[in-house]
Amino acid sequence: MPRAQYDEWLKSLPEELCTFCEWQDYQIVLASTNHWLWILNRSPYWKYHTMLIPRRHVVEMSDLSVVETGELFTIYAIAVDALRNFQSNLPEGERTGKYIFFWRFRSEVDAEVSDQRKLSHFHLHLAPDRERMFDPLLDKDAHEVDYIPLLNIAKRLPSQVNTIYNGS
Ligand SMILES: [Zn+2]
Image 1: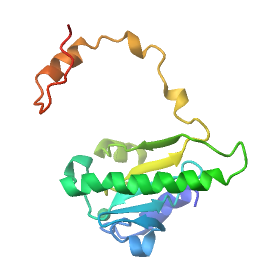
Image 2: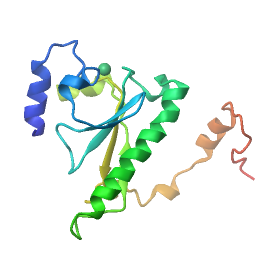
Image 3: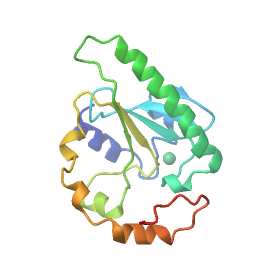
């Protein structure tokens, strides 16, 4: 459904209802594992926009358990394989070999500004990058920034593997 309609629909639901927790009533599931579901986006930003959601209601990626984190890559592989299969049957020009896979931090500030109801249930977006949608975001001057302050912070981070760049 179109975005504006989706926003109205979300607002019409009871405040405490999570449409991801209640996926059986509200979502179209493409595949599932013990801890994850691959679902269609009910109001897609792009064509064939899908999402990966944990069955458990967590807010941040860091809230996932070790088992859930590991299984994310299983559902991801299932989803990308299926998208590739699907894409290979599309006419030339509709196909892509590139997929985008990302998540956004849901801040309270963002929700206030947009006046939209945001789902706090963690989700990852997955879609074919047919329209090269991220390319306009590329920053051609990115290599010019001073990385030393970031590297200095990184040196103080706990690390189990000693592979951090040491500046030499
Ligand atoms: Zn939920």
